[in-house]
Image 1 (cartoon, one colour):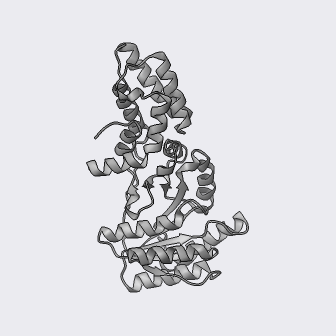
Image 2: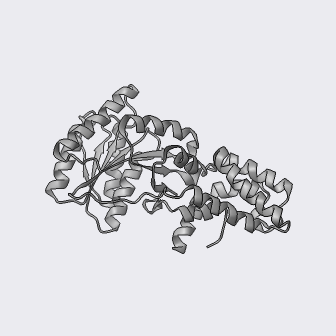
Image 3: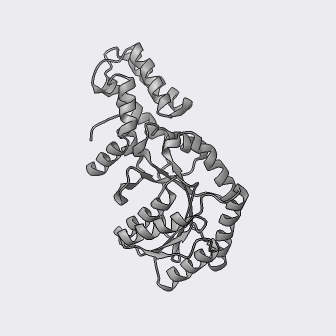
Length: 306
């Protein structure tokens, strides 16, 4: 567990450093004062925690400070982490298998969100856990996406169903489902297109994939996850709303948190959409896709050790 927390802390290091820099290392142990509270407020806004969460954290810290003028930075950090844990209660997604395999997971998101690499990393993770997995390259609109998945599949020794650029994505999804069913695979992970000529074309293609899957399994897809780029901060909320309305999302994967100081965006996304967060991306390696942990996230953000 300690190793997992270390990964969270390293992956969120830019957010942690940003908060520490703006508060002049408040959480390193010095006393709280009015100036440091102002700095903390600015740091939390900059890290994209949003108005509601920032106000809740500050309210709790100020209340504690009012009772104890000797309140230290570490105390404030623990209070902040406790507030985050309360705000995020219920946000951890739990991957449940379908009653009849393959459990089908459709990965959705705009190009550049990390959707294709996340599809490969998720498949590898499931395989590491002893599951059998088929990966489907259904972003046929973009040649680079198919090649990218092929490269990842070879590197991670994953079973891939793919076709040529421009092939019908729903047909590839159908072939992949048939292959996964015939081979009795536990999971089918489907990478989808992130951009077609118009937004309506993209949504129609996603709907077509769903219709094809449901012809063979009325409960499919069992999971529809939006992959969002964590560095977009609160801007990703509007993106998620569009996909949720059009496709009906069941969860989120937040990527690229290692490359941003706006790691608080996770909280805003959860507060706004109430969609569970299944995984977060904390680096470029396959093992850097980690199940979302409220406790590890909250403690890492405030630089709490262990």
